[in-house]
Amino acid sequence: MKKISKLILLGCLVLFSFEKSHAQLSLATFQNNLSRKIALGYNVNERLWADLKITPPKLLKNAPTAVEFNANYSFFHKEDFSIYSGIAVSYNTSKDSPDLILPLGLQVRPFENFRQLSFHSEIQLGYNGGDHPDTQIINGPPDNTYEFPTLFWGFRYTFRNRNK
Image 1 (cartoon, one colour):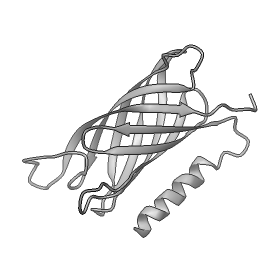
Image 2 (cartoon, rainbow, N blue to C red; image 1 turned 90 degrees about the horizontal axis):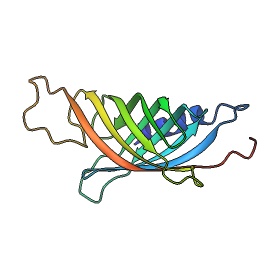
Image 3 (cartoon, rainbow, N blue to C red; image 1 turned 30 degrees about the vertical axis):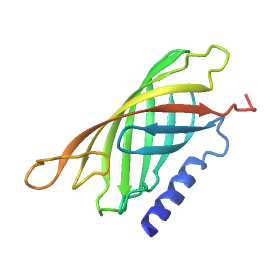
Image 4 (cartoon, rainbow, N blue to C red; image 1 turned 90 degrees about the vertical axis):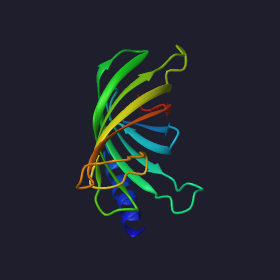
């Protein structure tokens, strides 16, 4: 649990270290049928942002807690939707090695007068060195490493920047 606390602290320091930036904070949820993540985001500009995602422990016995740090870039950005990709590193309490994740997502902002709210769908392609809490693999490779695709959906609220 000490590693998780250090990762959360490091993530918060990185997220809030841009003192003179015109950045905005955002809060998001990501969920699927296997897990739920809560994300605190730091939007550097309309196209670039970072997320600190936390997977809280489940009510099930011995469920791992995970912390994930994402850096995302919106490579196709319009006023009402965007397509983004990035890179992430995730660590959970059930194992010692981190996961490397490549997210690819779609954000839709359907309300013309309320663009701070967006709905998103994200597929995460990842690689790790053991069992991952979001997937159920029956027969993995002999060395117990595998690539896993995971689909998440949710929403994001971006707080208005009063300095703009």
